[in-house]
Each structure stands twice: as structure tokens, then as C-alpha cells.
Image (cartoon, rainbow, N blue to C red):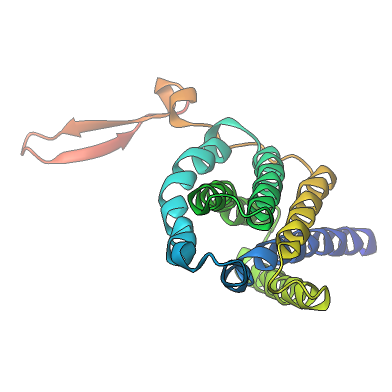
Length: 221
């Protein structure tokens, strides 16, 4: 009993650490982005820079979310996206620092948004797959992401990077930490798609003599 309890606490700690690091990585770039753009004369693209997240929220989950749901382990997808996000932030921060064309800066910010947008839902998938009672257990673990977000913002301020591309470089390091942390997580297999279950596992739609459609699940093979 004690061994099982210790194992569960180890799992909770692992999942809480994932959310904490992930929350910090998200906050370290998104929060100071406005002041960083203002400090470097990029006021004109600021509304569009924040709109990139909305656009990415429509596009990225359709691609990477579907990949994590059906074709690859969510852990591996999160690892790849975290590494790609780190690279995109570093490029965007460098573009701001070197005063590249504003629209190129915006394109790199959009690239970052496309990479980072689906990561939170993928992290949640990983966490839910390892919880026995998600209604009771998820809340305290989710709170660690909020603490991570706050810690990330405090770290940026402690580095005096609220108006500096250093905020982007710091965020890139945090995303690399997320990618590295996924190597400590056990693999999570994607759920089997309906097409892989075979015809015997699918339901059949039949029409009754009265013309009413009904669903009749087929018996397992």
C-alpha cells in the first residue's frame, strides 16, 4: 500500500512539474511581448502579433492535435513542438534585436504561435491519460501551470528583460526544458482510430419497417 501511494505521489509530482515548466514557458514570451515590441519601434505590428495566436488556434490543432490523437504518441508530438517553439522564439527575438523587416518579425511570431498553440491541449492529454480520478486529481495539478506562468514572468522581470529580446531567449530555454522533460515521461499510445478496428467493431445503421433509423452496434469479433 505504501509503495503504491509513493508511486502515485511520484506520478503527481512528475505531471505537476510538466505543467509548471510548460506554464513558465508560455508566460515568459507572451506576457512581455507587447513591451518588447514597443521598445523596438514595432507598434504597427503589435495588434497583428497578438492576432497570430487566434489564427494558430484555428489551424494548428487540426494538424498537430490530430497527429497526437491518431498517429503518434502525444509525448513525442509535444517534444517536437516544444523544440520547434524554442527555435521560433529564438528567431523572432533575434529578428527584433537586429531590426529586421517588421513583417518578417511578424511572420516569425506567427511561426511561434503555430508551434506553441496545440501544446497545452497535448500536455493535458498526457496528464489525463495518467490520472485515475481526473475530476478530483486534475485541479491541483492544473494549478501548477498558473504558478509556472507567474514564476516565468517573475524570472523575466528579475533578468530585467521586460523590454528586451532576452525575454525571447529565456522563453526559448524554457521551451527546451519542456522538450527535455518529455524524455522523463512514459510514452502514451494514441487511441486506435475507427478505421483500424475493423468492420466487426463498427455499428450498423438500419432502417426499421416504420422508416426510423437506428444504430445497432455489431458484436465484437
